[in-house]
Image 1 (cartoon, each protein chain N blue to C red):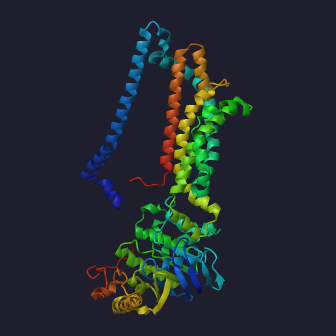
Image 2: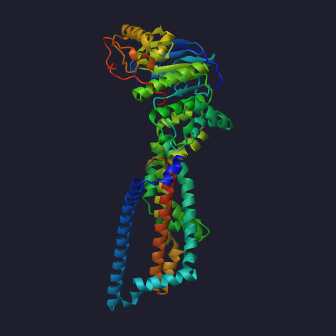
Image 3: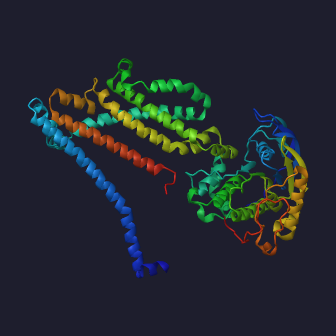
Length: 281
Length: 290
């Protein structure tokens, strides 16, 4: 009955209130959208000016195709012909597999390091040492150790990605409220329950944050790693375009790399938000 | 909920010293608690009452001596005896019902959850919150969920480690009453650790007074059950408990609790000479829900 009454006689005040609420929610969204648009436009202006300068100088005029207009035209062609998908899929597979291995190694090790003080003390120096070595410096060893180029590239990505995942996981475990362990133990939790019911849910967000950071690193390592050996992927496409002097294709590929990287990061960010049990008021 | 037969607790010549500590946290403590009895351990901070409770619950192993529950030496935690802590420490990624079912899941009785959880939530008056996230609940409601979680395994002993001390006065009063009633109705042996004489007088049948450096049991004081209804009997029991404590410790404990029940509205609270916290001006109301 109450519901009917509300529907039948919508008080003006409520409507006004609702409108005010909408404006209150939408205004900051519109504002941030507008500012983002300004930023993107700024980047394009910069790019366009650069293109003008390059085209205006007789010594660099050969690179004029780097400018926005030829690049975007070429990008359109590459999208319709399927070339973008063709070069992105192998790269995404490599990054995906590299992250998979990094998580498979990084999460359990991170839990161990976060949970056991002795493990932390033992591994601290070696891990910090290994972390500071550029993943690409493992390249010669990777090429020798793996039978396929693909294997070597996935290894390099995993080596780069394992550290953010490991450290974020360890930090998450370290921060778990000790009372949760006490309560669980008191209720009869065995180590398996402790892991699946307490530790993993408690640190799910830390793990994902680690994976998000790792993705950023992996995406950066990917392109130089793909300069080597393989004949597919975004890194190869860049090298190939340079060799054939197709600078519009090169710039379009750079654009694709940026857009995919941004997209993946945004997806992960949304995923983290969705999975979070921490209340954000 | 069915009647649970409370367990018998026997503490034999217990001593405990923490690593790097100079004196014993507990020294030669012996105590017998009858099945279904409600005992309060009182004493000031550092007297070892909480340590004693943790040892009884198997969460800390004593340096010397032993605790027997129903004749068996306590060697670790068990679903037969569970503890409620000062903080509810619910798992924030779970609903109320999932938190309550946790003990059942840990003890491979998850299949019982469907039947037991609604029963337990009814017992603690939170049925309509079953699917809510625990972060939406007030402090008192969270402590009620923790109580339901503790009772899920039908324990024979309930250990209460100052579970009401972080709550506001009204919430505390209603929870004290409800926990006492539930423990009584289920027949669970209950051991409460508190630094609050009023709380002991309000809930327990016997108060065990402890002193510190080293932690020792100094006196057992029986509490008339009439005190539970509040009013003059409660005041009298509280006063005599306070006097007994002052005798032993030479100083007063904190008393901060509300008068126990709505029926005591007419009673003007007489403050004992050394009482530190003013309670006389507090309004008395019947607060059923925390």
